[in-house]
Image (cartoon, helix red, strand yellow):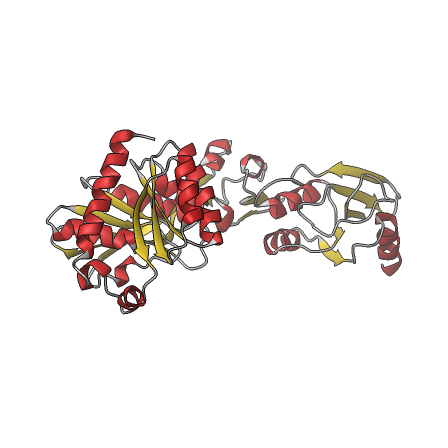
Length: 269
Length: 106
C-alpha cells in the first residue's frame, strides 16, 4: 500500500519511477494499476543428462549439495525442485554427459499504467519453491530507471533479503500491535546488518504507538509517516483504489515521505 | 539380505529414529550373516534435499530394505527406483527388536 502510493505520487508529479512487485509469491500491486502488460517467462537452467554418455559414476550426485541428483547403477534421478541451478554437476561430470536446459519458474510482466510509471510484476509459478531468481530478474528489468521502488514480501526470509540487496534505503512498514513491533525489530536488524539506512512507516495506527516509537527512538530509526487506522482508507484500498488518487491531500504526505527517504540515503546507515 | 535401520544411536540397542533422511545413524544388518555396521549419517543436521542423499548411502551400502518411521516423497522415489523396500515401524522400538521382527516376517 505504501509502495503503491509512493510510486503513484511520484508519477503523478511527472517524475519517472519504476515500481517493482517483489512479493512474487502473491503479487498484488497490479490490482491498483489495472491495464495491459507485456509478459515473459522467467527460467532457470537445470541439468539434462545424456544417457548415452553417462557412466553412472556418481560424481554429479556427490557434488550436488541439494540432493537434486541421485545416481543409481543404471540411471540418474533428477529432482528439479531441489536444484539451485548452480551448474556444478556439469563441471563435476568427467564424461561431459550433462548439459543445461531452461526450466520455467515464473513470469515477469511490465506495464505502464501512468505515463511516468512503469510497473514490473514478478510472479512465481504455483508450487515452485524458487522465488529468489524471479525477484532477481524483476530487479534487473528495473535497473535503468532513475527511481526504483521495490515492494517486498513481509518478514525476513530470503525473498526479502534478495529484494533489499543493493537498495539505497529501506522503509519498514509496521502496525502498532505487539506482532507488528516483534517483526519490525527483526526486519530492522536485517536491514541494519545489510548496511541499508532504515526509516519506519506506522500503518493502521490506532494512536497507541508508544512502544513502537520508543523502539524507533532507541535504535535511531526515524518515523517517516503515520497512517491512521481509518475505515475510509480501508474502503478505498478494498475497492482497488489508491489513497493518493481517491484523497489527493495524501499526495503531500507521500511526497514528503519520498523526500525523507532521500534524506535517509544522504545520511547513510 | 542387507537391511538398513534408521537409528538414534550407534548400537542395535538404540531406539529407531522415525525420520529417514535426518536419522543420526544408519545401522546395516544382514539377515544371513548377522553382521552389524553403524554408519553416522552425514546429513542428519543438513538443510534440504537430505532424503535423496540419504537414499544414495543405502544404495552404496547395497541395502535391499529399510526399516524406519517416515520416508519423504523424493526419498521414496529414489528407494523405489533402486529396488529398496520400505518398512515402517513405531519409534518406541529398539533397532535389534525391529530387525528381529523383520527377519521373522520374511
